[in-house]
Structure formats: structure tokens, C-alpha cells
Image 1: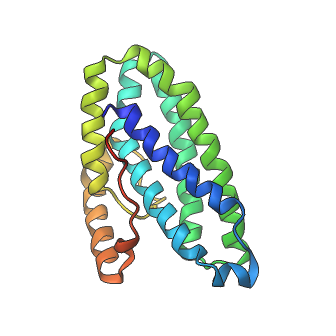
Image 2: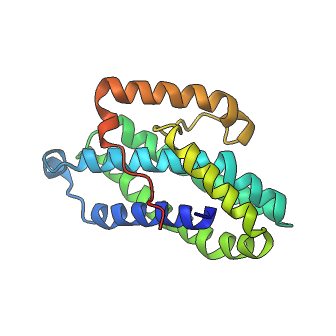
Length: 194
């Protein structure tokens, strides 16, 4: 699967979660509804997705597009804002005002970010990158997602070099924590190859 197809499947999964979360209950209903499980799945999926993009996807955008640095910088800035919102969700509880506010903000920001990638970046990248580059990147993204961090880590610098070193240690710690706590059993499935 090429990189854009792989990322599109990831986006479809997240957009589906957003549809469910749009009508999420608030107050005591949020605490009793199972919202925490759905948001945990969102945190895991988005943490992995953003990590692999920062590690592998945005470096290719920077390399092959004349304004790739500007596009990648804008996207990474959105992703960093998203990580801070995800951390608020990770630290909070459904029904708390800050939790509900962070969830609404994340859903809105997430939709805007996905639209930016799919409508602005992807068409230009598909035109500029060789099909072999996109296929190779797709394979790398798929492999990297299996070992990517499952928590947001908003204070980790969003650079490929950092993610290739410190990120691997962080990801390992995340996966161990998930296994011990049982959180890992709720990990959303990877996109299926068609």
C-alpha cells in the first residue's frame, strides 16, 4: 500500500471516531457512557499516527516539495497543538469541563488537520514523488506504526531525528505501560491492506 493510501485509511478510522464523539455525552452521563474507552482509542490512534508522520512522512514532504518545509511546519504545528489537547484528555476524566472542552477542540482541530493534509499536501506530493517512493514510504509507515508511541508526549520535539532515537525508547515504555495496565487491549487495528 502506498503512503497516501495507508494514511487515508488511518484518517477514515479517526474521522469515524470523530462522528461518534460529536454527540458525546457531558457531565455525569459522560462518566457512565464508555466515553473514556473511545477517547483512549483516539489517543492511541492519533499518537501513533502523528509519530509516524513526524518520523517518516513530513521528511519526505520537506525533501520533494519546493515549499515542503512550510507545509510540514504548518502541519507539525497543528499536530503539536493536538498533542497538548490529547494530553489533557489523557490526564482528565469524562464529564470534567476541561476534558469535554479538550475533546471538542481536538475533534475540530483534527478535522482541519486531516483536510489540510488530504486537500493541500497530498495532491502535490502525489504529483512530485515517484510512485516507488510512496510505496516504500507506505511500507515504512505500516511497520513504524506497530512500534510507535501510544501516548501524546507533547513535550517531545517533533523531529524525525528525535523520534528515531528518543522516540523508540518512549514508544517501548508506552507499550510496556499499556500491557501492564491493560490499555493495550483497546489499541485500534492498523488499516487493512486492500
